[in-house]
Length: 335
Ligand code: ADP
Ligand code: MG
Image (spheres, rainbow, N blue to C red):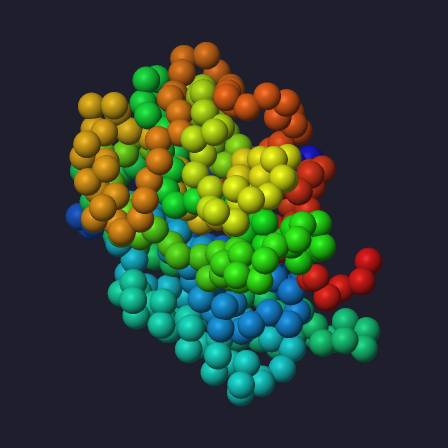
């Protein structure tokens, strides 16, 4: 059973709210407002390693939630923080909370509550750290968008550059040599993702559908295609990649760029008639965007422009074949 089959079978029921399970954010109507709500959990050993910089963990735990709000075109408003910790270490907590509040301040999002518990030891070792944030934003009812609005003929766009976080992991695993500067740049993308909130807001009324890429381009685009009932052709050579990425061997490059995960860039669709407005919106959003394909009537995803792409490339799934390994792992752990 895959992660998404599990969710569909056991946790998806009809809801009276505007949007339930299946999109980056749930949407609920409250009086004349619509709120976007999302939650993301980060678990030690799955999403980050034991000795991760606590500042980067505080930043990333909020960033990944703000990224879901960005996909929905929501303006961040507030969030709740649930923490399970093996010990109360003041230095750790100072660094974690400092970076968390720095991002929260920058995005105008206030911490309004949460829960804190201990983590029981596992054998002789400390129990794992778990961080779960629930973020709430506001959306304009007139410009609601989710994963399901893509139309045949729409352009497919992506922000930033893809795959660097996955490249940082490959490097930490010893699979690929990188220069010190390249390694630092890629690790920064892994540990300090920048949620594209301003772009998400600027695209209101322009993007027909959007998703944030957390599990890899192929997998997350698949969610958009499925929910929108369309297909897509993607020009693989157009998919934006960093200098560090372009310097590595082609198979690894494709694996990272197409199926790497942990990118937290926005993937969105828009009518070709909106091209100029979309480019202007991206300038407003402070991030480069690239047009990488077109939506088609024929269902499914066609990766064109590169030969010999591994047909098994797909998004990260916590319960399926794990073709790419977990999105983060402990390079210090011996297997
Ligand atoms: P994201 O990557 O944006 O966090 P996913 O694609 O992982 O979202 O999740 C797909 C959908 O399933 C989302 O709408 C999410 O809210 C929902 N979902 C995930 N886990 C559960 C769960 N345990 N119960 C209910 N809904 C869930
Ligand atoms: Mg998402």
